[in-house]
Image 1 (cartoon, rainbow, N blue to C red):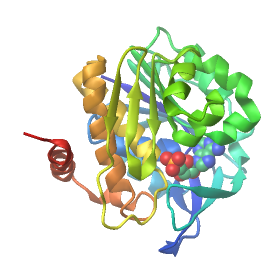
Image 2: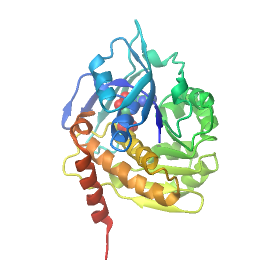
Image 3: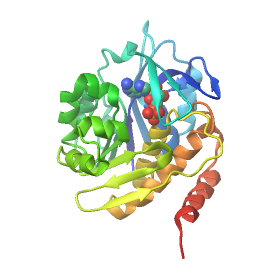
Image 4: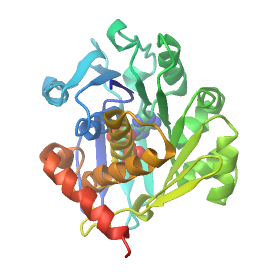
Length: 303
Ligand code: AMP
């Protein structure tokens, strides 16, 4: 099944207790595509970059079977830039800088060949852009997953709430769930969020795993205990990429299968954090992914 991925393709500058990088290639859509590519070869990308964005990075996506027809390259403009710093507790980070640049006036154009994609991943991006993509689809995709973050809640809550009405799965982290619902308890937060429109909500809790809720069921998956967490950037997007990639590959959107998808997403996130930026996702093979999923199964299996 085709997966349409919308999100940022970006430059990131990251600081963690283990090191610091200058501008490296990142962005929500980049991580989503890399993680999804282990599950499906039918990936369509919609995003925007400036002319400062390296051709090699676009080639890297193409090599992962990502169709980049919907990636706009804006002459004379600069790519979206984000900079963040993690402290000793790497579940929390401070955003040091967000420069929207090309995103400021981004008008997404969905190529004709993408318009019937069955699986739609609305990665972290301006909610108005997420809505514009939704409105250009020829028919309602079988599954719409939306990811967002506090930045968009702070400035564009009204647009975000409108987009949420059309969503099948919302993925957010625990702090964002509290901000969106104005509830401290994550169970109450999930209930409130489900009343805003999404049929399912996944609340990511970093190294403490992820919770999947619908109106009558709940599932919890731990995060794999990792010896060396180097850089958590992109973990949430890698999770989302693995999650939707697995569902598209199996073409089954039941709650039961979403549980499996959560485990597959968690496996991708666990690889992502082991090195800076996209490095680890670029190094691993399908065999590595398979063995990590088995590690997950063994982690929670009891006789
Ligand atoms: P994650 O760690 O999964 O939340 O995602 C990190 C990625 O999100 C980085 O590569 C950033 O380029 C990207 N990012 C940071 N801020 C934003 C934002 N406001 N909108 C969209 N993408 C963002």
